[in-house]
Amino acid sequence: MGTLYIDRKDLHLKLDGNALAFYSGRKKAGSVPINPLKRVVVVGNVSIETPVLHRLSDKNISVIFLSGKRLRFCGTLHGKIHNNGILRIKQYEKALSDFALMTAKEIVARKILKQKAFLEEVKNQRADLRLKLTTATKSLSKVFETLKEQTLTMESLRGLEGGAGAAYFAAYAAMFPPSLGFRKRNRRPPEDPVNAMLSLCYTMLHFEMLREIETIGLDPTIGFYHEFEYGRSSLACDLVEPYRPDVDKFVWEVFRTRTFTARDFAKDDERPGCYLKKHSRRRFYPLYEEWAKKARPVWTEEVRALARRLHE
Image 1 (cartoon, rainbow, N blue to C red):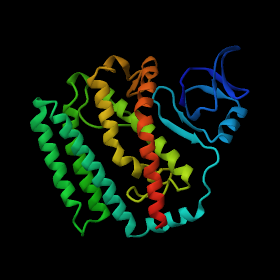
Image 2: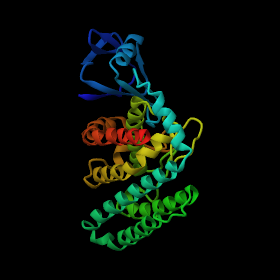
Image 3: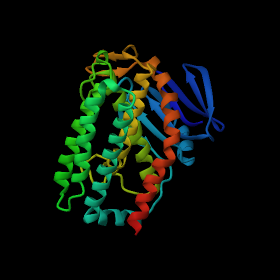
Image 4: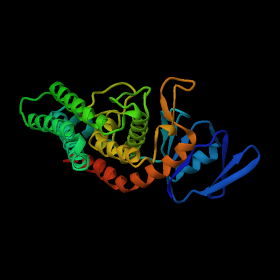
């Protein structure tokens, strides 16, 4: 099973032997064995008894908490994590050295190469977008070449990434039908179905990487490209950057195949913004899980490779 998604209003979770038991009112609604689980995603108004949290913690099963309609990231619960103090000391030292800029350049370069490869792939399928996609890929190529300059600073690197992102999303937006209302990347709140899906998938990816970071013993708040900001998991923000184009491709595919359409989303209902309807979320979870389970070994190795580099 791997991942359990709990997205049902007013559900109550109890421990039943080595299983999670779900109750709606006084009636048992079902149960799930604990042993196959690696992570649990809890959405909205769900009550959980303390013994459940104790068992999940003992089993090193991570829990992510998301808000109801907006699916906003609220927090995580982990069990025993790696108490690798030496690794964290080396992380702090490297964050204040030339290693930070070197790593930041690698992160941006990998992201741009993936963006370019994705647009090239789409260009072979969409002759009607050849001009826009070609223009964007040329812009990305120029930025990539500029990354090789020795005089590059962290500030100029961020400026280059911003320019690359603008060129990329101008082409990316053209890949979707006008009926979806997707013209540019926006968030907090997302204003259209594509942005809503992007934000949701980025949130899930961020949690996946955060889990790997905390499990291995790194400090998620100390990044190399993203500056330290109180309350932000800067290292997780760093490590998800090269995988954002993978999310973009996944989102494009679910709309291209009409797996999801505008009818699956609600807009400005109670609060401003656009979000996935509850009945549509039930279809989203297995689709995301099928995609993510292939990528998780890669994400795990990403964090382990960084830990090895820090020890060098």
